[in-house]
Image 1 (cartoon, helix red, strand yellow):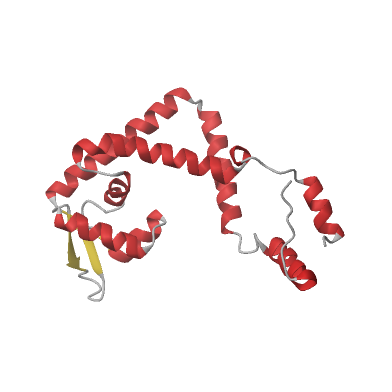
Image 2 (cartoon, one colour; image 1 turned 90 degrees about the vertical axis):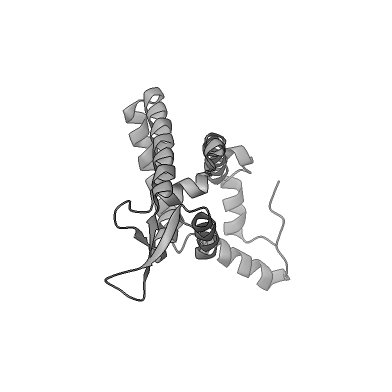
Length: 181
């Protein structure tokens, strides 16, 4: 059984096709960008992921290992595997932090600096191309909208209403009502 509020909510928000959702479009765009970088990088043994890791390592002082994953929105386990592979290829190396003996810094080898430069040039070329096609005013609106979406994503209460609805449905009949039409 639907409560009155839930029924009115369904009527106000028509069923969306995936192409009409914000998350689908962002994910599809990111996959396209990642694929583009991967196609460029294959000749240089660089993936989009390794390129972004390299770009987030300070060229002179290195970067604490614990800081890289949050900068990229990655899980630390995934980064650990990636850094190990990059170490095996001779792109990076680990060194104890001179100011904090408990911490490890990731530093770029000479080969790692070359790979980082290739990544930097690819990112710069893509961004220059986008900026040559899309007027600055539109890009400013795009960045503003992305900021608002990010604020929404960071809102810890984002699913509070739907969680309440689910709880009420389970409490009333022990199952979820099928609301897709």
